[in-house]
Amino acid sequence: MRTRMCHGVVGIITITMVTSLMVVYHSSSGDTSSSSSSSAYHSDNHGPQLKQPKKRPLTSTLAGYTAVIDHKPLKMHCTSCSLVTSSGQLTGSKRGDEIDRAECVIRMNDAPSAGYHGDVGRRTHLRVAAHSSLQRVLRNRRELLNASQDAALIFWGPSMSMRRDGTGLVYNQLRLLKQQQPALKVYVISRGKMLRFDELFKNETGIDRKRSNSWLSTGWFTMAIALELCDRINVYGMVPPDFCRSSSHPLVPYHYYEPTGPDECSMYLSHEQSRKGSHHRFITEKAVFSNWARTFNIHFYQPNWKPSSAIHLNVSYTPDPAGT
Image 1 (tube, one colour):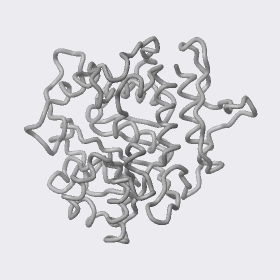
Image 2: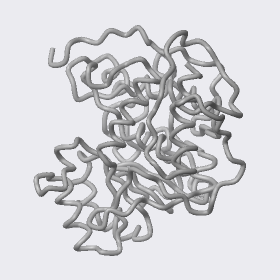
Image 3: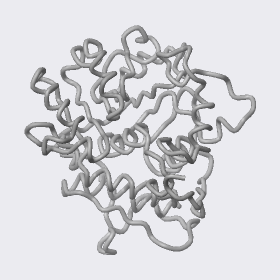
Image 4: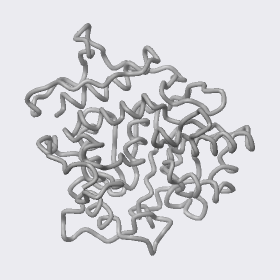
């Protein structure tokens, strides 16, 4: 599995960084338990080895994230990032000052910072949001947009919602938002990049997202984007993949800003076990993140944990037929 991770994730970081071209993820067939050195990796065409650079440019062009209206690519680079989840694990954490000390702070969907500064910090440099969160972002634009004119916003969604031919409802709303607030930096994930995120998930897990009738989460997109963007990633509020399997896990809300909302672990487990569609593989994704952290500069806080060993994911998973 670690070989798959190296081929997929190092490709998205190194090739994007060096060539600014779209990367095609590659997964080697065969034994999933094989491993490789984290210092050098072969390219997909088995050509010369591509080594992780020791120092990256101050600004990187990230292909696959295009600005609405002018369609220019996102240009951004951070030596250190605080990736702030929306988890209730952050309530009462008093991690705000620590989070703000990073060069860049990344947030998700419509998670606010106002009113929670002591726990989640004040600063925002990048916000990654799902198409389904757009209306909530617009309703809270005073907090999420007006106060973050210098932040970049990346929206992801199904291709029908993001079409540029006038029929993409979400894309049309984003264009209107940009016209109303020209200073905002609004980007969308291209269709080609979305397909590569799907392929990366399949390479890492053995699960075809579409055949399993599920959606990748905003957390998946945010972590993968952070790997392209950041030299070091400090993740706040993300539990380890086996956390909710324990009967003694504490009960916390799914969102820190919705204290009476659903329990986090109940949400994770119900989504992981669902076969009805429109659900996420939260626990599977966290297992992938744990594996990535064994090679890349990713660290988990609140709760504090480190991956102890490689997790062999369920590559023999047989999904139910879509629509059942």
